Image 1 (cartoon, rainbow, N blue to C red):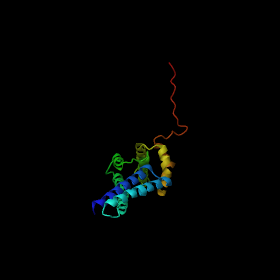
Image 2 (image 1 turned 45 degrees about the horizontal axis):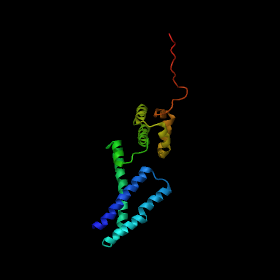
Image 3 (image 1 turned 180 degrees about the vertical axis):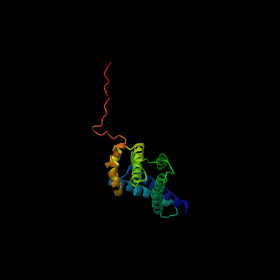
Image 4 (image 1 turned 90 degrees about the horizontal axis):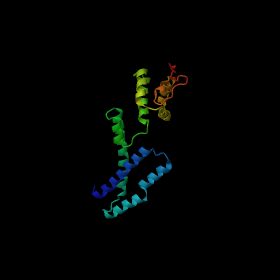
Length: 193
């Protein structure tokens, strides 16, 4: 492979890496935004630029090398993040290092909810006590608001465990949970002497 073909392939790899990064970072869900992204990556200016490069090279079809690099970059980033997630899940890298290396921190409460799901699984299988669960939930710092926003995203097998968690009243251990009605403690008035 000569240098004329490596350039478009590296350009494609860089663009593919960035596309996957931005899709992951900004959670593209709108079809119009996705269409605009695909148009920018595969659109006229990029292909025209590569065609102009082909005029100065040995006449090879450089578009195929661009698309090859695009795929390598896109799936390379996916593989990179997958490895980071695995390393983080096994505790081989701390969460702050994961966020730094992935270069796109999760939304507030996302990691805390994932850790809560893990702890709830351990609790439901009897590996940890309810008291340890209470302590761990307090340590996580997951707010009630973040919990409510994410609990519907849990997988079907976790919904039963989350339901049991709520029925036992353990959800009150989350940060920012208001006190139960009727249990508000008021300061006693000390009579003046």
